Image (tube, rainbow, N blue to C red; front, side, top):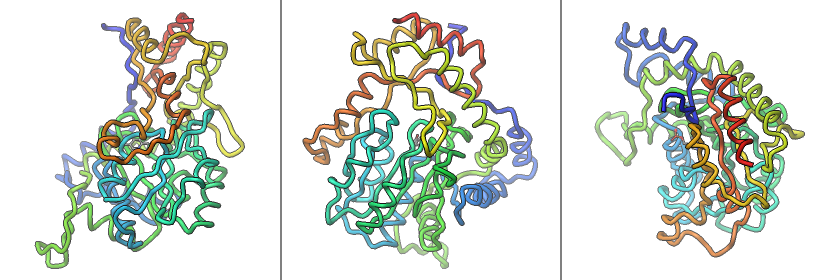
Length: 373
Ligand SMILES: *Cc1c(COP(=O)(O)O)cnc(C)c1O
């Protein structure tokens, strides 16, 4: 269909091409190139932390972040990490890959972030850290997390893959924890196709991140004391990410404008729209999600099919982590129900939200959504 509106269209209208040409003209294409170094230095400083380490994507950023923490803080196998139940597999997968145990906490029904009031009951003597994920453009309510971390002596990990440039009060997301991660996947606020970064202010953690992401090379270069990974980011990816970073503030203002327009156009449909504003943040609408009201006869799957038939690309919300077949197979899930994340999956979906989306397309999307009810 020629007029199909995809769920995401990136906008590459800054210095992306110029910087890519620089890589080619200078021959700096590997991870040794200057865009990698500049992005690490400038993005970490923007976030308010000392160090950055670019990696191949946002998923391996979490792998290596947790690996570094396990090493530095001397966590043991099967120690536990609190993880939101409503998020991408990458978060819990990284915990499992590091021989730790994810403990899933249900979502909060309106912000869709981890329900901070349900965390304390899930803390055990083996809990070592709380991982938060700022969902869809609205930060997690961090003050409660800080309180619990202090009370139980826990570390905090922030997966800020959907929250570049977002703030909690006046603190940047990714700048409120022991270690944080970002993704630069094609649909993120900073997009370079595939890419990610780990951010921290700890000398020890950054040293281990850089070690494990780079095959654990030692001073005696080809002598290895540990097994790591090659998670390096190329200068080509960093060139695009750097150009996107230069216009981050502008992109976010644009996203907020788009969110406001959708809010206006969809205000009276029988669905819950994203929370526009809280005491601690203004939503920056990484994506625009909808959750159908309980009295709506159909679920998200049917709605997405109907919208696809009208030429509109949507995505379902996340599948609850505790119900993931892989975690049931591995015996990681317990029998506790997480009804909020279950309902979010059943009734939630998001509509085209990329920066490349045109205003007339947004009207078309909204009209198609309204026509369903
Ligand atoms: C996108 C995303 C990731 C994974 O990033 P990739 O670069 O796609 O590997 C991890 N966590 C969250 C919350 C994300 O949105």
